[in-house]
Length: 212
Image 1 (tube, rainbow, N blue to C red):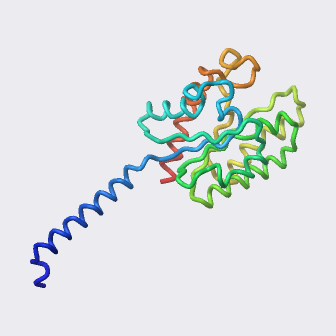
Image 2: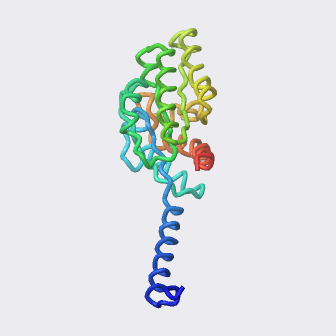
Image 3: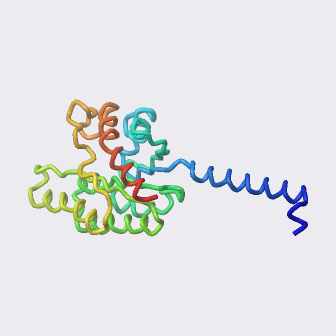
C-alpha cells in the first residue's frame, strides 16, 4: 500500500494512463479507408488524378461530413476474374469498405454471366472474411448485345448482392449521359466522375456506419 503514495509510482501511473488515453483517441480518430476495386472507370482512364473517380469520391464524402480516405485500386481492362486474382493484395488490410466495381470488361468480352457471378461472389466472400464492408457496383448491358445475354448479365448484380447481403449500387454509370462521357462514349469525363461520386457517396457512408 505504501507504493501508492510513492511520487515516482504516481507519476508513472499518470503518464501510463495519459498514453493509454491518447492511444485510444488516436484509434477512435483513425480515418476510415474506402478502396475502389475496379477497372478503367475506377482507375480514372483519360483523366488527371485530381479529376478521376477516387479523388471525386473523396471530395463527395467530405461534403457529407466524412473524412474517409479513398484509395483507387482500379486496373484498366480487368474482368471479374482478374479482380478476383488480385483482390487479396489490391485491397489493403486497413480497408473498411471496398467498392467492387467490376463487370464492364466481362460485358465487352461477352463472357459468361454465370462465371462473372461466381467471381463476384468469391471476391465478396474474401472481403467479408477480412471484415471489410462491401458495396457492389453494377453495370448495365444494353439490349444491343442481345436480349437473352443482357437479361442474364443484368440479373447478376442484384442476385449477388441479395445472396451475399451486401449494399448494391445498381448501375455505376447511372446519370452519366453522353455529355458526361469521353469521346469513346464509355468512360466518364471529369463531370461524369463527379456525378458518380455524388450518387455513390451516401451509400458508402451508410455502409461504413454498418461496418464499424
